[in-house]
Image 1: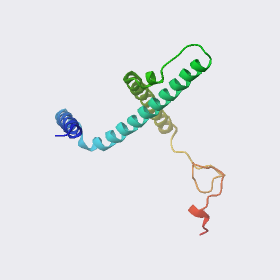
Image 2: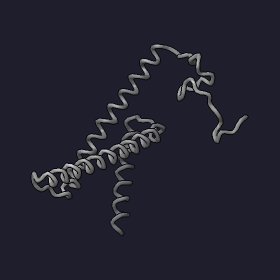
Image 3: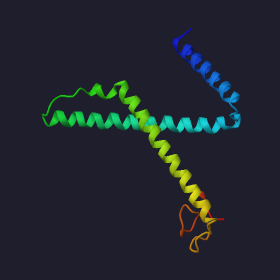
Image 4: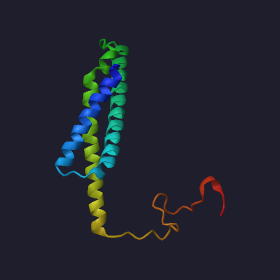
Length: 140
């Protein structure tokens, strides 16, 4: 069995076990798609932090070299610890963002429904006050 299939089989087995354990604990199966979307968002945030950390690290290493302050190997920035720390950054940031969204939703619910602005004839919150045309500039 190729290594990649072996790894996928192990991950599938542990995912199945986690699903079964969650169902036994009373977790609803209908929440899995939203959880998967959140996991994909977390992976994306992790990759953004990882790329940013590598870019900043490489820039600092090159700056230190250029200023003659020493020598930092560029490959140090690709150490697995940078990926792990990037994952922690992503988890913290996404948790913060989710709490912010929940807080905003609670505040909006407390205020009640918001009427469209008087200068926004379409009621579109994306661009208040602007005349909106159909896509492609076609007229109705």
